[in-house]
Amino acid sequence: MKILEVRNLVMRFGGLTAVDSLNLSIEPGEILALIGPNGAGKSTAFNCIAGLYTPSEGTIQFNGLVINRKKPWDLCKIGLARTFQIVKPFASKSVLYNVTVGAFATTDKIDEAEEKALAVLRTLHFESKKDVRAGNLTIADRKRLEIARALATQPTLLLLDEVMAGLRPSEVDEMVEVIQLLRSTGITIFVIEHIMRAIMALSDRIVVIQFGKKIAEGTPKEIASNENVIKAYLGDEYDAA
Ligand SMILES: Nc1ncnc2c1ncn2[C@@H]1O[C@H](COP(=O)(O)OP(=O)(O)OP(=O)(O)O)[C@@H](O)[C@H]1O
Ligand SMILES: [Mg+2]
View 1 (cartoon, rainbow, N blue to C red):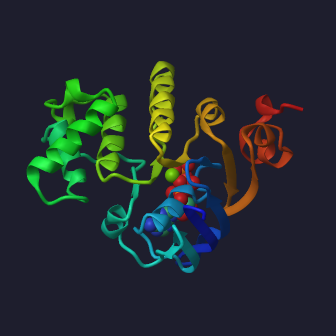
View 2: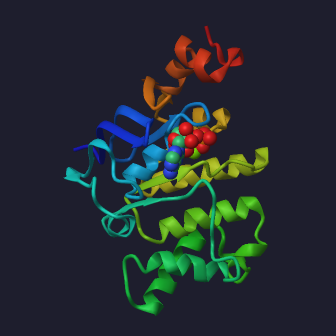
View 3: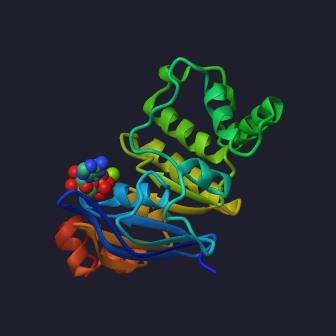
């Protein structure tokens, strides 16, 4: 069974159709990327899948269960978590506090939540920063915290919205490694990203959208040489032909 199956997803804001009849699915254990120009509807699609918006039309199934009307907190509890493009931690609280909040999705015991949070910080090689106030973190570490908060909910499907934006090249490489590590632990990854170098290195498959509609789908190699994608988004330097 697919872990995620999106059928004819439509999301309208008044007269604007931000996501337009989108179809896509993800196999368990896969890394799927969603790419496309600014305003293409990528984050809106994530917001529908993660329960922030109720889709105008279509169905979203998670492990066979229709989740169209489920709220983010309920989705977290069944294993679907996301990060936000704009990171908003509790700035005056520590890294550990922020991650422990995420862990309360799966337990109501403080000790257990903190233990889970520490385990996540260890996985992400982030334990040394556990007492740092979130507001004092660098951008790269804020992105890492955002992933840690989502991971603490113990997802089987993790949605990552531009976790590499604003990072230096070496930090991008580190983030690619982190995401590969997460996949190796069995987590399925759905990632939105503009940094093509990272997308090409990470993804098993890529879906490209423009004006809310899918314009291409394929392996990184297929996408890099797809005429429509080069015209709409990638530009000539990606023309592999
Ligand atoms: N809550 C909202 N209300 C009204 N319009 C919205 C809302 N959220 C998004 N939009 C509009 O929907 C369209 C898609 O936006 P979205 O944020 O999904 O794009 P995106 O592909 O994530 O872009 P980016 O790469 O810049 O993050 C845009 O035209 C945007 O202005
Ligand atoms: Mg976006």
